Length: 202
Image (cartoon, rainbow, N blue to C red; front, side, top):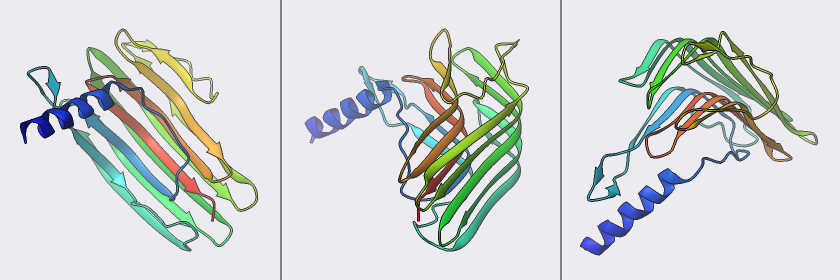
């Protein structure tokens, strides 16, 4: 029994140490924030952490004709981030699916880094016969008190003293698109996605 718990703990620690990957999604979904914080380390083993999701539409099944929406005037993950005007929406039609997630007044602090932005939005679109596409918008981005120019190019990467920030992180293919407007990865501490939109080709 103890061996099983040790193996589980080692697997969790290994997963937290791996770089995060992005793949196109099998469902259309939008969320304003998804934050995973690593659990405590006991005897050299990092225990499973906690994941908090704010303004999440939930998945819209591939090919479904429907609309989902989630919003909040303000939201926070204690000791990590706060934001306001959180919104997420998805729309499915017979031949296309679209999603959008946004928020304002982001204030994020992790591993000694402070990240703020006035407005963040991600959009994803999937069309039958055309595959997926997406884009993002970030206004007023500042990292550790320094204004950061946002190029708009996919997967713009900004290194931190510990960790990395990825802007307009995206993956598109024939099955759909996934766009994370801002993704902060600090291995072993936190993985925070701000404004995530995915769309699956009907």
